[in-house]
Length: 275
Image 1 (cartoon, rainbow, N blue to C red):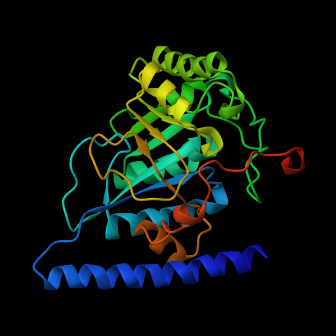
Image 2 (image 1 turned 120 degrees about the vertical axis):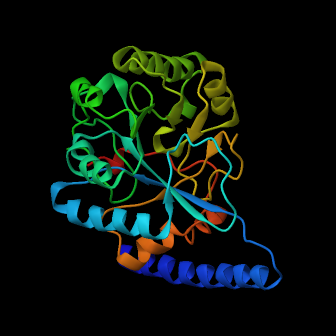
């Protein structure tokens, strides 16, 4: 069933890509340049066995797009493809296997950290078949060793809760305390945030502004950075095990049609999800 759904999404994305490519061709024939396209990819884990696949994906990224940081604040040039790389949860396997490949290629990336669980094993679950219960989160020492000119660190709350279920006071603490803890640990500003499970509300977005974040990230598939001041940014899920064509289409924004059909708030994990 999973493979069938994956193939179905791939076929639809191929069609979507062809339609948008025809639209770009028509614009160029009229003497107009298509708008810039930027995709923010979000990963979770990159295991040792997946490192070669991830490396090939990064080679593809620098071939087909201009890599930029997730906190990029400048206008994008029309007609160009851009891509930013992010990792939710800041697992040790990402630092061990993904970060060296990024540094080698000078691709900027952002790691979103669950700050109360540094060095601990993840104690939450994700959706569907993606199980991360055996992954260990980066230690403080590992975070301090990241090159600040290339790797941005952002907050992913203190404890990875389902934020919409918390009171406003509890949610604000998760947002602000995690930012403050990372700022004190790394001695640098923490101005980006990623919602656990992609679960957000308008009230939570307002709280993020109030505690000082300059940009926040969801898991809603859509293009990013239509404006340099964009505050709520959508992302497209990527995995080192993506098929080559699958990843290529994601990189070029052809999977953003999924954002039209998805609900604004993802399903909350149930006990049956636990692995």
